[in-house]
Image (cartoon, rainbow, N blue to C red):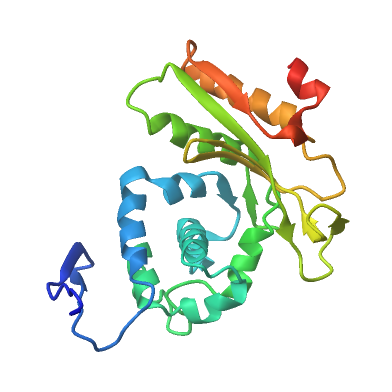
Length: 255
């Protein structure tokens, strides 16, 4: 059976007087062209820009080569493309597709790449709550948590009559001697035990936890936080909580 091919090029928004085109005629090929679609979606909802707004930058502005929104966007898009390890960015910092998505096709200085490398992104990932002498990039955990819910609320044209919050705890297997690693008998491996809360396809909360705890640990606090923020916008919505037997604990049931 003959393969159906689309020979027509796909045109994207121009960048710095350059045409951005997805072509199927061969030549230099990238397996990351899907990032262009992610970039278009991101510009529509402003996700990475708003996410970057949850961080603070204490670096000397005149010495900064890679600004904070670029670093945050670079890490987010790389994760979406399947590049989980920071060492991948020693190559990705020169990637033209990722540079196009982030609007960074040329390096700010001759001896630098257009995007950040693993060491720069490592400092971003180790950002503490406040900036200080040794941590120039900080973040606001409460603002990040609230952003997930804000995006969920804004995805609706109007308040629904009822929503269902799905609670789930699952394993995040570990393959080294990471801090806080514990063996979990149910999953039969060393792992973390993160808590996730969804509403339909929307992720509202994600908490990384050690595995030596009950699956429902912290669930009451997270549900209370989410319900409070949702009801502040939708005061009349009916909110149901759905979870498996691992969450059938007196604290959550009583709440």
